[in-house]
Length: 318
Length: 193
Image 1 (tube, rainbow over the protein chains, first blue to last red):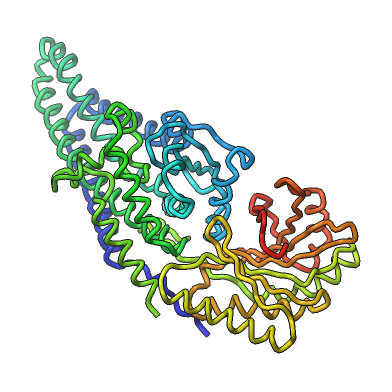
Image 2: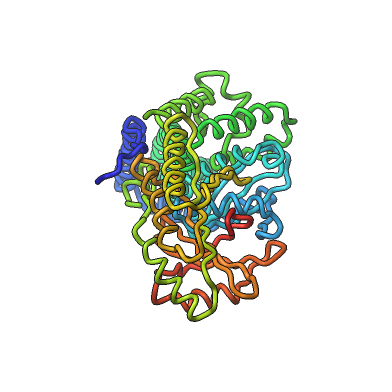
């Protein structure tokens, strides 16, 4: 007998996420084609700019991919903890890993009072789960479990890898903008004096810059969109894993409610880590407008709560 | 998890593997012969309850089922406890010689949950042992991996790792033991241990 399943995937979310990635891929291909087209029309010095951008961008992406756990831990000022130091937290993670059949991540605690959590590391074997003291202080064990299940879903979905690959394009476009800008300032002027062949150098750098700016803007928005979908997917998997969507929902309201009351200095310090956080530190101010949502790494509170309510309803059905 | 699932951020809930439980009675014989540990007749199933009516009803049915079989054979009723992590433990107590009956009970709980679509909620099943010096030992079955591991608690939240490794060696031929030691998570204060 085939047991019935209560854990059907959300097709709508899958389709939207797939479409976003397809568009990102499309932008990437168009970008590469444009750069190749431009480079073919020019001499080596401008081609070198593109080459350096790709090498440096690739290096940055690979570096952040392999050291994501160390970078995130030191940015958050977090310390790894042993089961003896944090038995409660380890107990929760042990159980979630056994339920999901995942290897156990290393666990760290960040001393900050900002209530948040993140998981990072390039794969399940190198994953680090970090929660802040503020989170542990504010949440009940059930809510904490919900947050940890959400973070472990990010690990299971290999979100660090997906987002690194997705951001690769934006990194290169960003570098090209910068390089061609400096090329314009320092390179262009010197060359124009000596060699009349170089008359074309200026517009071509401008074209590279313009293309890069467009690509950067589009891919930035697409990456943010993808990030929001991955958050919804992690909420969903986390809620199904613990079977307690309402505990996760209540954790969400508590976390974002208290974030709004915390002084802004801490918020700005936390901003670079936002993409990996459970709830972004700036959400309270940003989420007011539709435009703010477009730039946000996390879906709005209403969307997340609505999804969790739907899951709760599905789970309760006979 | 497949490549596409990674790309699309999906996880399939892991389904448990139940039939391995029936290898426990013969493993208990091996264990007694090699180390002197005998079953106490107590075993428990641990699972994560799901919010809402559907799961509550299934849980109630399971308890009634076990109570009925208990009343027939004249054993103690099933004990239900909730631990501090929010997990539910159903404890079934039999005579120490009735390992088969115990395993049948445990299996009934598991299959009731699986049949109603709640298989992914199962965490572990635990069968308790004791030796003449009253040392405590549990064989823990991890549903999602289909493997067993020994858990020997000492007073003060410490584990007797030496004993655990010895037991793993003894039972290697009878049961599929968990080879990845990082999966041997402690179940402090597990009911029935």
